[in-house]
Image 1 (cartoon, each protein chain N blue to C red):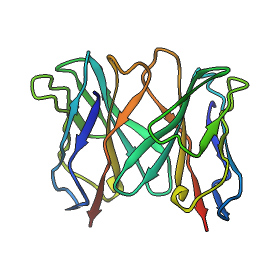
Image 2 (cartoon, rainbow over the protein chains, first blue to last red):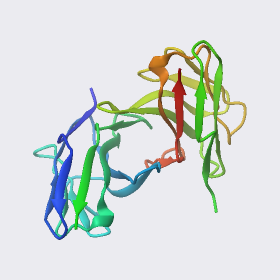
Image 3 (cartoon, rainbow over the protein chains, first blue to last red):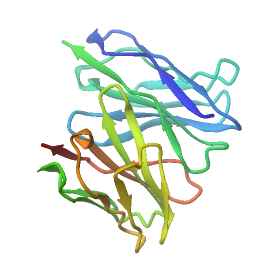
Image 4 (spheres, rainbow over the protein chains, first blue to last red):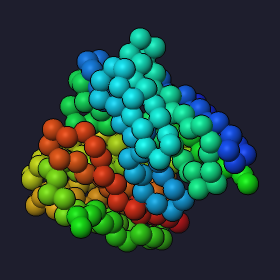
Length: 113
Length: 112
């Protein structure tokens, strides 16, 4: 079946620290992979995506590379800011999922000044 | 600008009452979804629809129902609210064949 596993939180970092949030997936076919971000009191919004193996999605200084050989899509940012404090969700869709999305449980990030 | 709107944003109700959460999108998307978000569980799919008059059960559909009479709306009904249904509910939509979900701001439901 299809599933997404992401690292447990919460994660607390100092401003300008390096961020990695791990995400691995199980899927049949060739899904697209996503990172969504949820700021406090808001709905989820798309942060970045990658649609095929070796693609790199990037946005707002965040990056993630679709690694088919390790079934991973880890989120990274070189220097986090206080404004990056949010909950981050890894997700997959497409392939044999039809139009459905499968989400990880979310990782809460707090960045302190 | 196109948007997806949920109402009410906050609701408190009593056990056994019927509750309806509204979702309205102006993206003209065929696909609409309802999720609930709970600590430790992330997002879980309740019901979804791929078009008018189409509805399907997700992984946690017991106690919930939806109907799709037009493209824009997918209301979620709790027939007899239970305390276990206290949660934050998110509506989302996507166009047919596309694989990006657009989310509403959420509805926080408390069942006492």
